[in-house]
Image (cartoon, rainbow, N blue to C red; front, side):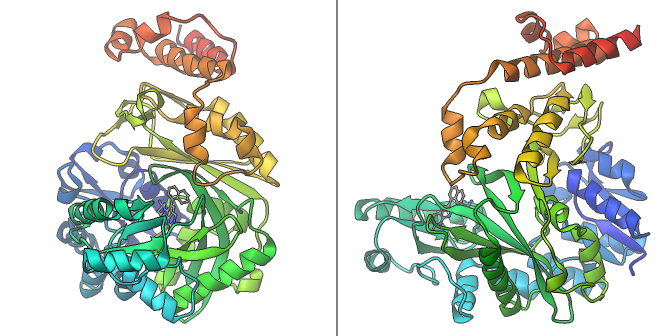
Length: 506
Ligand code: MV4
């Protein structure tokens, strides 16, 4: 087993990985940029090394600097987390050449899955059901027109180097094809340096369901069931759950078998996720494979009882999977809320700044994976994900009720967060009934009614922040005082908490 691992990431996922290292008796080395000197992952690691300026290209994306720290500190392995270098085949290759184990798949599997067209070609050959479409880049407008007639409108144009919606265009008719193709190509070129675009048939109001796989370096592959990720905003996942409300045991088994087959056909190792689109008739189609640990991995951990980061590390150290497929059982229900520093009243615009008060929920069935602490300043330079609040229950209704209770205990003062969005989603009848297609969140966000309970919770959060930690001068300079003066007192528990904290201070 490794004695020391370098964590090539920041925020909540770096903290998650440092914890796993400590649980396994491994020392964790953190890296940090100028604006992350006081970040939680730096405080929790056994040693921390400054690697450069705030811009990710100068720090968390700088392959040479990161390998350099690994060599200098004697780290035997690097965990890339998600984002940053996690799906960069060149980084995996450079690690291998430097004699540092990359905790993730081999570079060849990463490269294959990095090209959606190459992946589709390989998976079609392996008999995997793919969304109908082309598996080669479009070469001319004439060819695009012919292919489009064959597949039929409406259709989707997608960037081969993409994933996550960049360079994706819906084309409803022949008239729309030319402008859509041109804008998809130029967006793909700008975002990925690669203008290759291909065609898929449109799957109407699909669900996004993904299957977690684990593959060791001895040819053993298992799946750990699915996650339902249909609640997205602008191709960003907002809330994920496991298991999916629409997947029954038979469908789980079939999707799982396909996911294992995909992994084997790609020569995949370590943890990965096979994404599917599921149509309204519950037919599923391979979409792409994510070659990293995902943000939403905790929901799978809660319903399987397994620790995915422990298993990633053990697989990377050459161990065999310690269990077989028939030992994997899905039990209970888990839902994750991604807590972002963004302003729900300003189109979910990022809202960095100093966290003046932090009250975090816990209690039965609650897990809080966080990269923040009270007094810490959220930098503007990176993804605004602050934390993940995950609820577990013996059934979906209990997971929902625990999460709703936890959200009422949750208080992040000094910055704006999207916590109120989850109060709305989890209180919504369609969500509670499991009716969540692609259009679900847009529909909910359009019905712009905020219940008075939500308003009081927001007001209480603001007031608690003021009473508990700020004097009137700093409250004014934070721009909070004006808002609080406009409203009267409420009765929610956060108000009482604020009063108690205020009492303690006097
Ligand atoms: C699609 C699609 C319909 N048909 N592909 C891919 C990336 C992901 N962020 C959204 N993607 C989609 N790909 C075909 N052929 C619809 C979506 C889609 C979506 C899918 C599931 C859940 C929410 C979604 C929101 C917007 C678009």
